[in-house]
Amino acid sequence: MVNLGKAAAILVVLTAGQASAKPPVQSISLTLPADAFKLSASVQTQLAAIPANVPVESVSLDLDLRPLAMPRAPSSALTARLQQTLTPELAKNFDLFLYVSKAARGPIAQHMYVFRRRMNGAFDLLHDWPVSTGRERVERNALGIQRFTATPPGYYELDPQRIFADYHSVSWDEPMPHAMFFDAWHKGARVGLAIHAADDAGIEALGGRASAGCVRLSPEHARVLFQLVNAQYRGRVPRMAYDSATRSTRRDGALMRDEQGGLQFREGYRVLVVIEDFGGKDIATQ
Image (cartoon, rainbow, N blue to C red):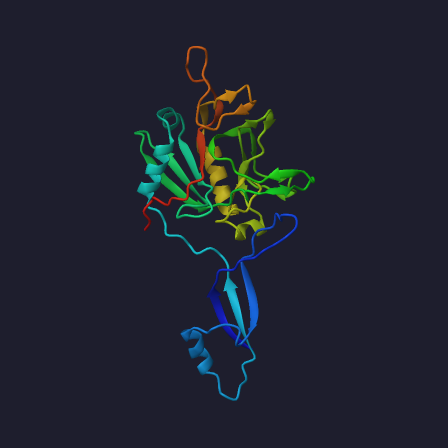
């Protein structure tokens, strides 16, 4: 058998049965008959170096199935994209902005961009990290309940009552270190979505849709963000508007107001999470 090393490949895999919560396969090894495919010139060159008296019965290929790295988008283009999503009130009343692309493909897909607002209103890009958002499919959780594992786009605040250095999800029976939950309600129930560290299996899936709906970071990046938020960004913030008819927090960036039309503030974190299904196809890369 001849091992020709790693090769890029596109495979179509059909599966049946219940959806799995496990991360996608990262690589696969195949052993094929030597005449099963047309060999490229580079492979033929390798085979030509084999002595004629050595029979070639099969060819072994290690296929790397991980997505190819996308070109990085310039910080100026990312800053412009963030500013396009913010109303003047949102830009003024928050100091740290976590822009998350939940898109499946594109130069900024499955990334979190951490921006700091300066006193003069300008934005600095502090961090550019790969993430995993929801798998976007119907699955059964650890309790046997069907759930759609989506990460809904929109604007979110962090819940000051649900910030945990160590947390475990009962619904999915998974660890959630450095969890910072969103302060949101949906149909009368508190939303269980958070930013947190991935476990060992989840680390390999970063950069792709692989979570049950939360925004996963690497353990190191989750720790850095957790410490940054808690050390520097506590303060008074406006509250997101609430729709009493649907008993849900609005996700369109509308803010809660009093009878005179003024913003309603409370103690919390001056951090705004912005989630978009935008992969950056119109953003120039470098």
